[in-house]
Length: 425
Figure 1 (tube, rainbow, N blue to C red):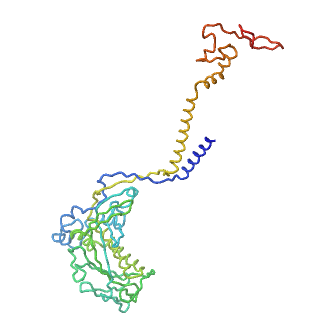
Figure 2 (cartoon, one colour):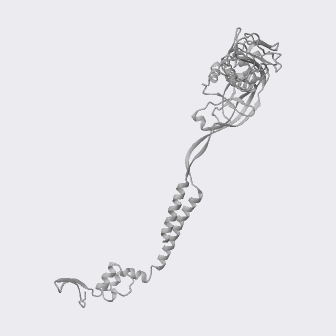
Figure 3 (cartoon, rainbow, N blue to C red):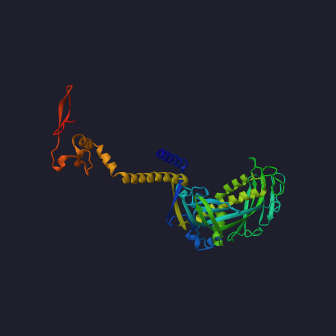
């Protein structure tokens, strides 16, 4: 009964163990060489001047971001800007870090390889804040076809029709000076637009900050401030876990401001699309925030021509494995049940060894084939105690031995007879 109970205990513990087993993911981390290019730094040509248009234009010298000519100004590396702008670059992409103040920054394009890696890197970021100033700029509708505004002498115009778009860059937020060839960080710009809200925009025209011209659209004026940052960030499991922005110097800011002023036209369609989509906002500040975020994305992409990949500060790679998680209670119960089996086996072995000598061994010997033969065909040696099985037989000691034969018996049968002897069978 005890052995049956112990077997049931082992079975129950084993069942409990298997029922509570769970498959879990085990992640092994391997340090990667820091030569992996997950950081972004200024290109060599952008590290030798203040990167302003003035520096490039004085002697018609090409900067790394701008290439001025007599009749026009060209991008010095437009392929990089266009690839990032259209999200097809394999070296950088514009990402967003959502905090109290949202930041956009140049990061690493997503891929299966990147998804399995964590790293610390440095890059450049941007944050733009806009506020609506339509009433301050006396934006109003006149006779349907005219929607004039007058912010300052440096920013005045007329949003004559739906889809109209005007913007200017300034030295400060007073909008009094639009000298744009060398700026500080942050830099300032204003946008006047008549967005096409015919698709069902939800922003409410209040006649002051949002003006609805007689020929359609939603008109507004924004004043925006853009700050360029040097950024150090950590990415773990494809999520930015640590983001430290530090305001960049003026030469870094000029890369993005100059690119947007002189060669930023490829980004205008995206900004105008953002302007139209922003009309689906509920309040005017939401509209301003959406356009500000879109500007940062476009500006970072246009100015990406001035940066190149650099090694990460540190990087690691994660390797996932599936492992079985075992609960401690059923595991130790099963081990304990097996140990109990072992202990009982040891105890029974000791008992068997302790009781296997003397009469028990002699009794076992008598039940063997040799013992039965000795009992039947020997005299006293067949029944007396001996020290070995061969001692049952007289011939071991040189005495005469019995002869066994089969002889006819009465009734025409046969039986065993021994000689010499008394004839007993």
